Length: 342
Figure: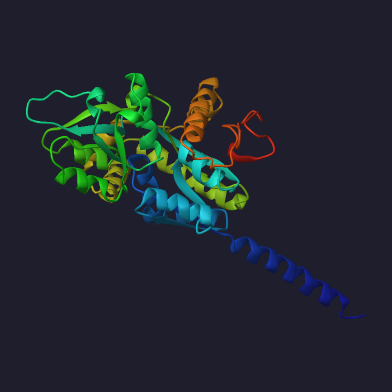
């Protein structure tokens, strides 16, 4: 038994080696799509901040652009990604309803004018929401654009029966609106919205600043994502927010880089940020999701989703999917919690 200490030493060495290897092998993939409040994810990847925080937590995190917003969420739901940038409504209506246990890891912002409804008028014509009556309206069907339209119509004593919704990919909507004849209408978000607003005779008739705090933009991840990945992503995000909200060359460089990702000038991107209520301080984002007002907003979202068939034909009510809040309370089915706010 003279070699027993040697055998024990080898066993201990192998144990720690295997433990380290298992931890280091945690690789998480995040999908994002173009939107003002999500351009920071490209910055995190390209600037090296994500790699820095991933190394700190001994994981790998890959952030990938998917140009079609709904497709990015579909791919997340199908298992191609471990996380995705999405609004609370789309996270509920697609992955949560699809059975993917999802946690909102980061609340990044709410749209405060970044989503809007446009109509192309004739020179000198003054248009409003009521002028949508009888028109075809291009939008990403059953997305937050659809929700925004429904809220605008309700505020003007109208309904979707007064118009025709035309399902249009966010990858196409800008070009289609640009080449459309007078009378065309569209609902979209920045940076597409800003470009579309610059089209001759385009008029903004309603935007998300009229429903503040209702279109909330997040990063959602699989609830069982390795904790190291979660900590790395949050760390990189918090540092990015600190840089964005600061002053000096580092801030200027970051904003310039994000503008480039968005296909905008620096001035245009700064203008987009003015209509984005960014949560630069994570404590403020946490206060939002802990507030009674947020639960009321999510009730509006649940009702819209159910009324528009987003829960599927088998869903008996808006309570079909359970939503868990930071205080432990659950809206909906407590036995089917699929969307969690931490």
